[in-house]
Length: 145
Image (cartoon, rainbow, N blue to C red; front, top):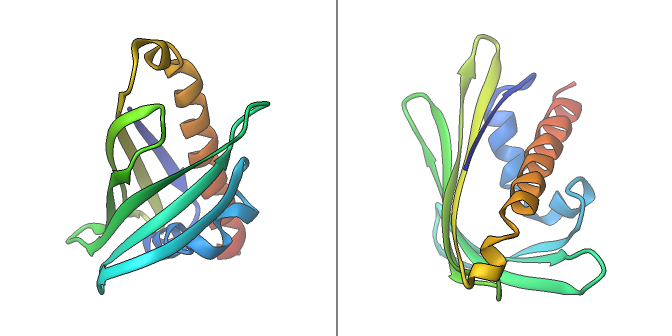
């Protein structure tokens, strides 16, 4: 899946927000925490995310996020190190580039579900990704004011 969104903030502001793991739970619904567990190098962080699922319980998974400055802006790439029960694997990225005085972001994520039953929940996963991107945009714009 890919989601594109215009943001009334600079690429640097949007990227800084995305990398502010400690405060992500203050604006992303259902996110209990995002804690850096390890820093393999200056541009890489292993982040443990804990997410509340409706009615059921919370899940936790470990993601390696790699940050880079590109010729057009910024990119954070990720892949699962410890997948939750629902996924065999996942890779994705957040690219943020200048769009006039603002930014445009592209959120991309490819998840390989662990079972066909989980694959049937694709629609819900897309909605959650859209809500997360909308929350990032809203908070980036709030912080940029």
